[in-house]
Length: 530
Image 1 (tube, rainbow, N blue to C red):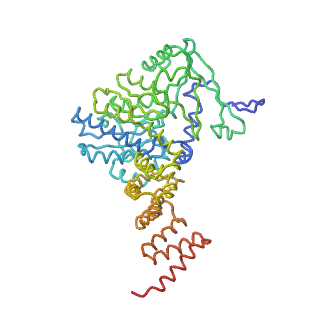
Image 2: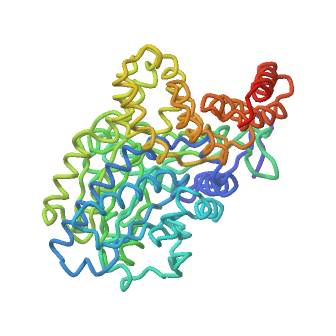
Image 3: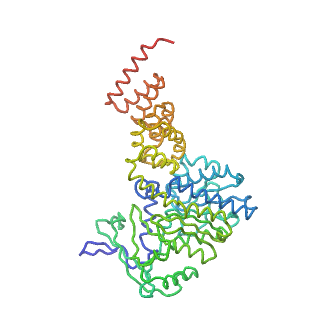
């Protein structure tokens, strides 16, 4: 690296093919260093890690399994493997597995075995998942297993718990692959079309010298990107499908820049080899889905958010599969995230019920539509009545993440709300508790459920959820104060006294707690002996 003394900039690299840029190494180092903390108020992930999208995937996958077994009756004798690329927080995995296993139990496919593979390239995330209390029941039932999988390096893929090496002998049925917010974070190549010629975009990176430590950038957000163009010749990839795609883009575009997700294609090619060329892929990400949205674009922009991400060229992924004899379903273009479905080794015409399910849940009311409503609701919930909030929570399948934002509003409305709405919310609180997936430095939904029951004076249920919350929040004054109140209302005054004494140890300046202790000591003294 060399420093430019004029503008105090450090040149990190010059004229690099984008897929070989240092940015990707910095990206990997970031995720490896941060581990699960990358998803705590840094990398956005809610949009692909909520009960609604997991329910969408589960119902499409269930229908796919039904179609496949109908067409291949012998398939029921072999497990259906489902592999999530770049699992990240693990929250989507939990919601999906919980939903699919429930659906299977109530379907005609009770005998079908599934194996869900949570994969990541860093051991830190897998260790967190292996120890997570929400995932433990599925791990113990051998439904969930784990794999270290680097999407850009081809090496044997072995499940960590069962020590099963994935191969064509193991993956008898098609391998289902989930790629949520992952195609946008692995390597791409960048190109530009101008006046009928195709160029590759070569990247140069620089940053202020104050952003350098130990000869490497400290904060990726402060890296500047410059571009240099280089006209390319045919057979750029030496891959028939990809080289045909580049030629097609050269003829189709007037003037634009676009990305080819080369790292993702590397991973998909490898998985195709392991799975007898039979893949069923569902992906949700930000990106472009049609030729017209890809034309007349400037040079690719990089979004920094702790890590960084790119817009995914879903059109290229669709072409990659269809040109190789597979299939692709990309919904009508609309603002927001895109959910797409791809197939290798078969087409959707062979799976009529699957195609209907995809139309209903991805072309119809999709995860993108849901998130659009969710954002609007998040902006306006202070104006909403309790029945509107309850309906939104029901649409969201009692998502704890949403309720945590709404809980204060709910508590402010319960005293004036009708009993029907109150009972509807109370009835569904168990579902929300079951959706709790603990993450560091986040609020505990079990405590908030406790405060709801506390507010509607159902003290036994409030006490139950407060006690469950203790496992996650530890010894907090507010928790023990509320437990003491509930115990008193349930005539458990001796227990309440001890609880308030413990609360006072946690906050010695609480006058209210001192008053409760005095009141309870007097009450217990005045009670006649039984």
